[in-house]
Image (cartoon, rainbow, N blue to C red; front, top):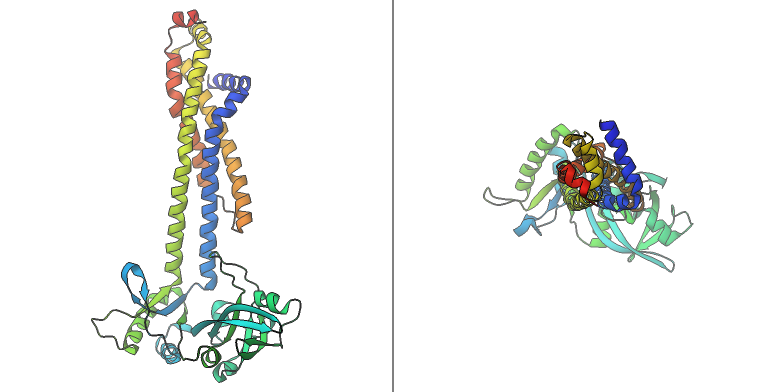
Length: 401
């Protein structure tokens, strides 16, 4: 019975191909939009998470600042190199402690100039951030402690200033100081936030403090915990030590904060996930519009086929047979729209993720849900026309012209 009804439904769709195509358009757009947006959202979430974890899984960032209104950090005194040394000695679960300072400077070579960010750090920075050298070397502990004027540059600096030349061993100017390039960093490209990770100059922190910033401040301290299980304990110890170092009374709020990479990744993943679901829900509205379109077309079809229905009922067809035929026709229409929508959505998502350089991650569950939802739309919006057809009076139907 169902097989015959399916054959009749496919025959009717084939006989009215243009109308069927227009009827399923809303379903195609709705399913396609949902699939595309969820796939893009998955890619964006994965990209954001990878960008954060690429810095390091067990990293903590100690930053100065007092929490203000709306969560905005109010500026507070910077850290000193002594703070980093004390944390290194007293927090037992740390593998690396790296004080950092940053400033901007113009990289000058001959008549070429490029404004960039200069990061001052200790030699542990490369290992802590997993930044590899592709040419030359990193600056060493001796150069770090003596404040020698050496630097490691990113690929963007090489392209903008050196062109095809090998930068290693050459001397450049950073504002008014001269610096020897000892290494070239591995290319990292842009991160999810649109930041060029190759537009950097890395120098020993003491060199930056003495010759560029003119002070002994560290704008942050990066701390690598030996294992994830020890992060909570390490944070407690850091808070205790730094409150004492900054002479904070028991009733005073912290004028510094510890930022955990894991928590940051979770927050961003939640935000992108909620945004994806919100956009997908908006796109799903077109599925309802498509359902209404199916209902209207099926009502027209019932009117056009009133005499056919009357003949079927007159020769012994039951009401449920007619109901099933029209219901299956509606479900087939919506299911075809769903399948085409999935294909369109995946194609669109593939093109968009390729253009945005995001990973293409298809969620099988959302594909299954899209098919089931489109079929449900067919049942829900096809039931009224099908019931109307099944309840036609055979005599009145046969009189219909």
